Image (cartoon, rainbow, N blue to C red; front, side, top):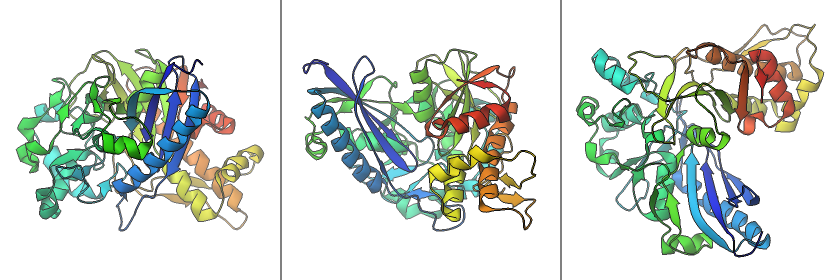
Length: 421
């Protein structure tokens, strides 16, 4: 690539790690890096993260990826784009500093706030067009308003995770529809904040950020931040998208096609060109990154999240976990793993469910437990796929770090009964 050709910097803020890539306009990757950070579970149902850890990890990953790209001949970063974990809540002051740890999508303690949503008139629930679940920004913000009023009083912005990260880059507090539509505070058919419903939840309207389109520049890289990242100031930063919407844009999914993305959670999505009000659905309906498009999503909360817990508890690394699929004995009955460590979303919609191994006896080994864990997550994905409206797909596009290993792809194809691409 000629040294004068500009490249783009992409940042993916995941639940447990940030990934950064420097990519040329033709798709050539010239640098990449990732950094992990902890997820804190200090009490039952909690799943919090310190946004300052996100920033430290992002800074280090950007410097590493850009350094690699410079050595590969990249002379200029022309723009920055972001995507990230959906749902969750970051409360920040007027300077963007977090006033408490962030609540992630896996935090289910807002279960006690859901009655306020269930008690809405049917027409209002239909406008929200989504299952009522505790990991979304709306219920989490209502819980903070009730349980931690002093914290709420000190906050100027209620942000989604990747929107907080963008605020650190640009100083601008904003969001975009693909993430905002997944908050239970968004009027899906009208494509705007449902501000008239906020008083029912005790949520101040001024906390909600302004809305940009996903491809719109939401600001430029601040000088003091640019110095930390070893980049020049003034680079435009796009509004970006939630991770699932970004994956749809990247893979070029067309209306009617179905895609499975597996990371900490798993998402089955089907692109659509119309939005419709549904009062009590079991699948989600969110805005896509492209204007005028939406997607249906079946969300599995416990995918990589559950496998990571199993891996840590049983003392194996990822290679050892996937390696047990090389020697599965189908003739020998094994235990069954139900992966509901944090409750589950599609299709059961019950945050109170819990995980278990069933059918254990003295002949079973650690390897049997690992096989059961992998099969249990695949089974949860099948359960969600069966709840998707419309005809069952004949082929399934797959994406995400949880589908990189070919043995996992084969397990998914066998369990779901579809060809995977």
